[in-house]
Length: 165
Image (cartoon, rainbow, N blue to C red; front, side, top):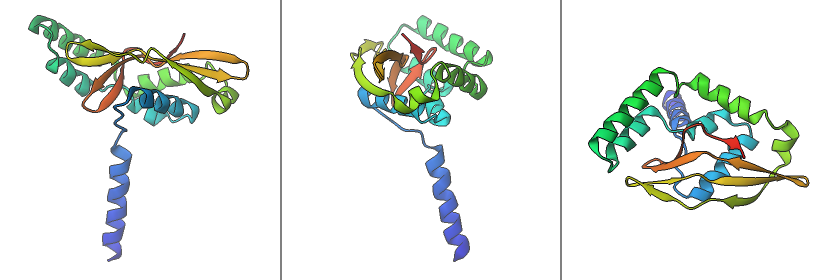
């Protein structure tokens, strides 16, 4: 009986650890992204990035001409070979971006407003480039989430990811 209960607990933990959030509302995705950075949750921030397989699937499903699809699929393969999707590279980019602001900033900044929440159609997929205005004391900072694509797993970050604008 104890082994069964222990097995169920371990299985539950494994299931909960391997699931990344699926957020289909753009504003909620922005809010969650900021929360990941405020709480220094590197694993969740990394999970917001599109994975190679998700990007390949999205490109395949796009309504673009086949020659363009082939080029995009090849470019994605080349990015993967160059380490674009690697955990180490993503964690380094996260740390470099997050440390531009100090600990006090992250602990005390608040969301003042959202900009550019409009989406556009890109060969059958919704895309956006939102900015979240963060207030810290009497200053504001523009946190550009990045270029986003809405997949069957919710919004995902493409490209370079977050930057300060």
